[in-house]
Structures are given as C-alpha cells and as structure tokens.
Image 1 (cartoon, rainbow, N blue to C red):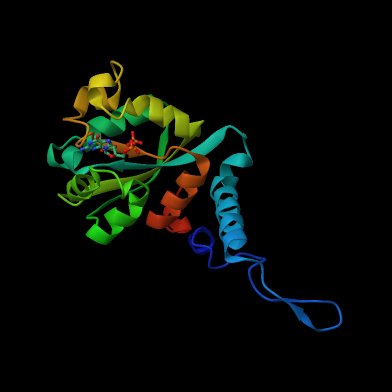
Image 2: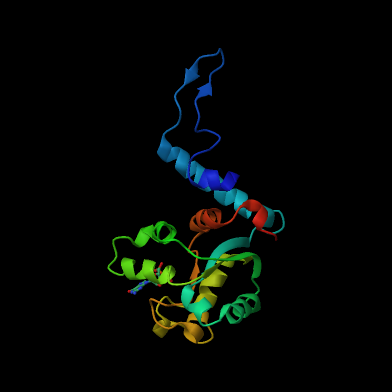
Length: 194
Ligand code: GDP
C-alpha cells in the first residue's frame, strides 16, 4: 500500500504543506520532486527486506506472457527461473485489461508495434511474478535472453520458448526504479512472501 502510493507520487513524506516553527506554513514541494522522491523511497522499501541480509539481493518483476500460458509453459519457464537461483516470492494469474497493458507499456506508446504489443498482452491470461535473488534484475534479463529470440543465446527462455519478437514469452524489469514501480502496480506488500 505505501509503496503503491509512493510510486504514484501521491504520498511522499515531503509532499504535503509543512508547518514552520512558529505556526505558519510553507508551500509544498513540486509534484515532480515528490514523484521522484516517491519512486526512490518506493524502490528502497521494496528492496529493504533483502538489504537487511545482503546488498546484492534484489527483487524484480516478471510476466509470463499470453503465449506462455496458451502453450502451457508456465511450469517450464518457472523451472528456468528457479534453476537460475531466483525465488518466486509472489505469483498470480490474471487477465490484463487493455488499460493496464497500455499503462504498463506506455514507454513504447509511440513505437509502431505498440498496438500489436498491447493486443498480444491481452490475448490471454498472464502470470505476474516477483522474483528475488542476487542481482535479480540482471540475472533474470540474462535468463530471459534477447528481446528478439533470433538473437537470444542458447539455453535462455526466449531461445527455447519464444515464438517471435512479438510473442517472446516473458517480461522482466530493466532497472531497480522500474522494478519498484512494476511490482507496486501488481502486488500489495502482503502478497510478497520472501
Ligand atoms: P524487453 O525488455 O526485452 O521485453 O524489450 P523492450 O522493452 O524493448 O520491448 C517490450 C516488448 O515489446 C518486447 O518484449 C516485445 O514483446 C515487444 N517488441 C519490441 N520490439 C518489437 C518489434 O520490433 N516488433 C514487435 N511486434 N514487438 C516488439
């Protein structure tokens, strides 16, 4: 709840009007600063349980895309994830709405493949996950393989299972800030059990 609110910049500790000593108030910080601060705090909070034990332990967000659920590959993909030393600490099967898919991939909204990408994400159920492990973001990107399966290394999920660049089986966060935002978009804190 708190990370979700923070990720959307609606509730940071410095976003409200503050009382100065003596009783008068000073203006709130700018929304841009609040949003940036919110994302940073959110990233820190989401990674905090791991930080207590090892600074290199991270969490990342994963999606098993509709082409994976359609071909009954969720177990096979999860095996690859676990063989790479990542723990699946949250997981649920959902159907994305068009709105959710457009929001999730909004960074690509100007790209020519955006419509096709959104259509593919709502074509069937997806499995959304939180993965935890050492350098989880890079570890998972390595296990996923290149975006285009034709360029993916042998043994990667995309090399073994992807149909095409449009149906490439999995999504994984590309940085700690995006991981925090993506996790907060799909999971409440109490749904993540490390
Ligand atoms: P990722 O981080 O490896 O998933 O790659 P990107 O963030 O660059 O792209 C997001 C998703 O858009 C990819 O996983 C693909 O499913 C899709 N995509 C990227 N490039 C293309 C393309 O040239 N054509 C089509 N149809 N889809 C693409």
